[in-house]
Length: 198
Image (cartoon, rainbow, N blue to C red; front, side):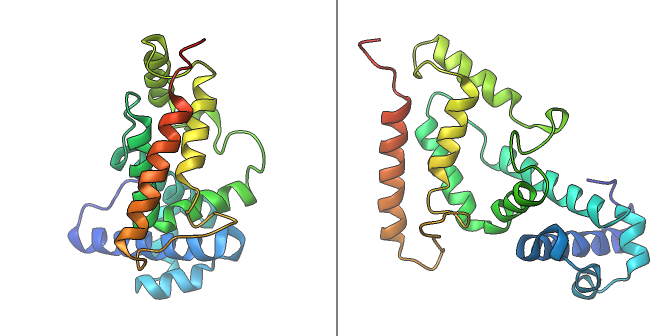
């Protein structure tokens, strides 16, 4: 994220731009987002937005990388319990569907293959180290740590806004979410448990 302004008034405007841009990009993507709608929703002007963020692409980058950092911080990995991590990811996608939509737009409009972001912008080094250490300790099945991580994340997204089968919502009964959490936890645990015969 660009440096936030020091005055409380400037900081409030900056945050309104971030909030409005997050919703705009999550709904319309990079190409479909409109600066006019963002500044109207943020109750500011283009000059202020461009002063903070540069241009629309840079604004998306700031929003997108902040969303990745949020997920990494709010849902830190526990490689000794990847099943619990998957359930916590499920809950984060449920409470903040805009974050997963931003990643989906980045995939569709910027990097259709390979890693979602360039190597120097990735947030997964510590996750991969944690998985590798758990593998070395015999707690997680062997295999490329990145593939293990990718599989667990994909399982956690089974009911997310990017699902091509069913997107969950917070309005569904708690019992429904609890059933999914139980299923997800069990499936991830089975998927990552080392094979005793190996």
